[in-house]
Length: 238
Ligand SMILES: [Zn+2]
Image (cartoon, helix red, strand yellow):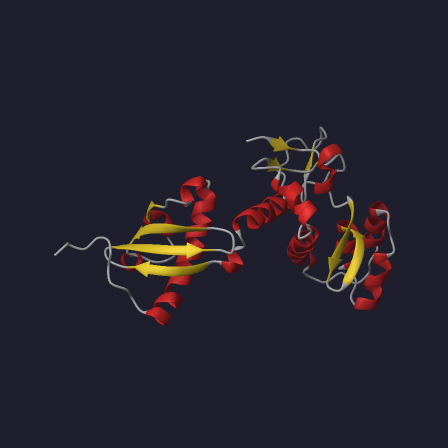
């Protein structure tokens, strides 16, 4: 896996300072930075001023001085950032550029001591653990664009027995998951149930665990609605 650690040059589009209009909650901002800083404002009218600031550095500076930050801004800001970047990369040309980064690890290397959203490369920070929130959000969005959002995950079919064969799909992909009967154990520990997952093989271990987890969460609802089907696997042939 390669690492993209500078959001400059041909990767500038990954930066929030990249000039490309971002439509978010009814307003069009000149870039993602302005859209993000605007969300620090309490009311809608105040946000409008950010639609007029072309320079992302100026938007960032203005955002720093917003007096009425929501109390839980630290936590809230991560969700807001993801929403804004989803909006930014909903534009086909930008989505394509993001997808073209393949499975490269994305991290905004910087020199301004930002180890929350990126990773500062200065001597003082070099031993600090970077959270890389911006990179993680970008990689999440990249995956959602290519594989379909987990929001659209659904179970299409379930065959039960001592094994469950679960056919699932998102809006972009589909696969089957073969697991031990989850009624033998709690839904919360899916990793012990994965015995085969023909599609999930292409995922990293962490990704397949997360996906399996999402699939298993849907199971009770699916079973309640559809009942249990005739077993296909794990029963004695008559
Ligand atoms: Zn630093």
